[in-house]
Image: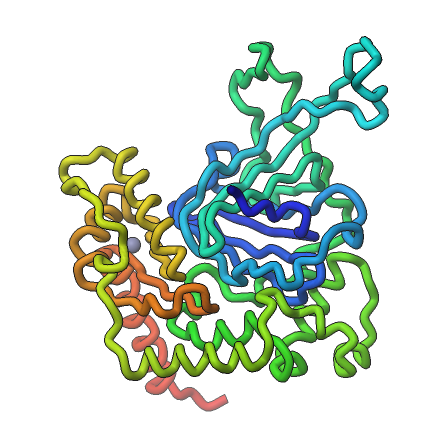
Length: 374
Ligand SMILES: [Zn+2]
């Protein structure tokens, strides 16, 4: 069964500007801090190489709250089907079906369909007729020769209603100030605290998040409200009490400091995995994603850099991740997320890091030598 998140989303951004990584943020109703989505894999052909901003149709205040939903605030795992398409829906004002023999009137509406697999299992974010803009990359093209159930081609191109000018601009949301896909991965502990941000953490870290969320709904928040806690009680995505959160943090600290962890290979379901040289690119992708899906349920993420093919990613999993990497299976179901990165085994990434370090060293060295008087 899928976890259908569409009804809870008030605003979202998702991008696939680097191969093998789909990254973004979702703002859910009733929750101040955005959910971070960091996925292994690309979006579908129409969405690949693009950055999308979207907002569901209708009033953002109408709908269920995501409080206590137990939706993990840092979603990791592989991408599933991600596409834009036209869907056929009964027209709103169509006469009711039943006794009447009159044919139901249908209309075609644009639909954004995003599926992934995370700590919460299969997630589906389906938005019919949302407001959507492509913030980076070419516009969304029409699907080629797509046909509906009856075999007839769908009518016309996919045209989404744009988010009106001046409403929810990127500057207001300030996604740039949030961590990007390749930042802060070493500081997971701090991230966990921030993202759960309940009770005592609130006053320090939520005004920005609250501001961002409230900008998406147009609600005006007085600074006093932020301090008084009027808007703070809602920030409880995981549905955890402060005591539970503290107990979780202590478990995390204890395990990380004192326990070596278990090999990744020992937590996976026993299965026969083909040798990397036996699979083609498509098979490798299916294997990598199916392993990543399983690891995601333990809060374990694999970040595949843009230089790796899926065959290379599979090779990395078989020869390095599964036999050598260690994880803490006891932290399954907590806020903990552990990242493994192919960039640590990628010649191009390692060379880039080395060159960057060299450049920085030279620049600081030059600054020191050419200490020109002003
Ligand atoms: Zn790389």
